[in-house]
Amino acid sequence: MAILCIDAGTTLIKSVLFDDSGKELLVASRDTFVVNPAPGLSEQDMNAVWQSVVETCKEIIAQTQLPIDAISVTAQGDGAWMIDAQGNPIGNAVLWNDGRASVEIDSWEKEGILDKAFRINGSLTSLGLPNAIIKWFSKNDPQALDKASSVLTCGSWIYFKLTGVIGQHVSEASAPWIDITNKSMSKELIELYGLTEYAGKIPAVLTNPQSQLSVRASHEIGITTETPVVMSPYDILATATGSGAISDGDAFVILGTTICPGIVIKNLHLNGEVAGLNLVTGEKDTYLRALPTLTGTSALTWAMESLNYSTVDEIGTAASTAKPGAGGVIFLPYLSGAGERAPFLDSRAQASLHGITNSTTREDIARAVYEALAHVIRECLETTKTPVKQLAISGGGARSDFWCQLIADVVGVPTTRTSDSQVGAKGALMYAGVSIGKFSSLSQASQALVSQSDTFTPTSDLIEFYSAHHKEFVSLRKKIQPTWSH
Image 1 (cartoon, rainbow, N blue to C red):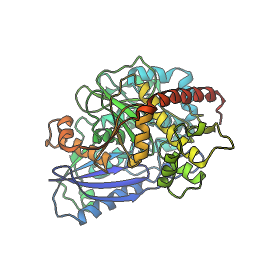
Image 2 (cartoon, rainbow, N blue to C red):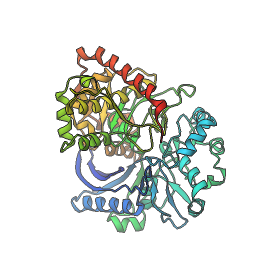
Image 3 (cartoon, one colour):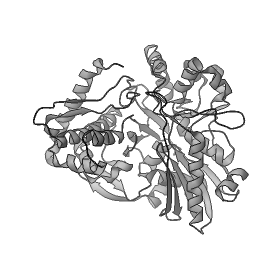
């Protein structure tokens, strides 16, 4: 048995072949490119994304004699990937980190719409979500919106190209379209957003997101049309699942283009703080409380370039030589042109360095960047109001032992790292295994397929220090926040 899992990220598309035991057999990847036609705008060529999927799948098929028992798809979430009635893109996809809808978000916030929607939906609408982007198009480019038959996401675009079926996974619909208590599309929410006339462009939630490979896709990829194609959750949920976060109380953080901490919960708290997302997992009576930020590992790239280091590994090594507290330097890491969306929403959010003196070193500043991102993780987890006993870390940043240990020290709980290199694809494998009947539940799939390879225990001497440092970090951000402006 072999399952081909497609993991379509923002900057990299991967296809991964797993055997029956969950072992990674083959990996093929292609870089993808984000287009920035103007400051704050973030787009991708939809056809180029699909072509990269085809190329990686064909590369895998060319290297194996194993029959492919299923294809499973996970991808970057949110955004607006619009197609016409013939299934062709009407233009570039607008991505999850696009900032064009700031006026719409600010207006909804002032009118109390975001708060009302959260009480129904459990998720805070932010820049880059499809409702905000559709609203922007309705005001600024209604002709383009009129051409659109469906407003997809990256995952549902790839699934459509593979199967010809238009629809979305319930995890994607969780924010912003569904009433999370009954897991169904909400007319009330669509009315709240002022999008009733565009309701027909919102893809239906697929109750059993499995179909067969279309004839056209079969010819393009080289796999038989009898192959089942499973639409797995989008990357946040797939990666959390692949890291082992399955049961109530399991916490996780994804160190990727976005840093996304969160925790699996059984009980929704729709009357609490309006922040982050609550996603339907597909596992009975569980939800994923996730707080995806807008700035992740890109902050390390920015610091690397700004401080004149050659690689991210080099800046990590430099940061590890500085003392805890970074010589008094505190970095506010809100570098995205779209501001920030978790653990607070502010389209004006900006990055800044504080506490620099003549004695400040490059190493201090490098460490301050890593510490800042760790503080963001802690603040997000504290926002969930759920005790965290252990934290499963995944994503590209998880390769750094230094960062994993620093997160353990700052958050104050042990952090674990899986033995898998393709954690999002592993989550897609687990969902496919349940969908085709190999496993009865995600819990059973997790027990069979996920193993932890490393644990980082908080340094006892630093727990109290970083608790105080965290309060200082949050206090500084709240003091600076009123000064942010575009």
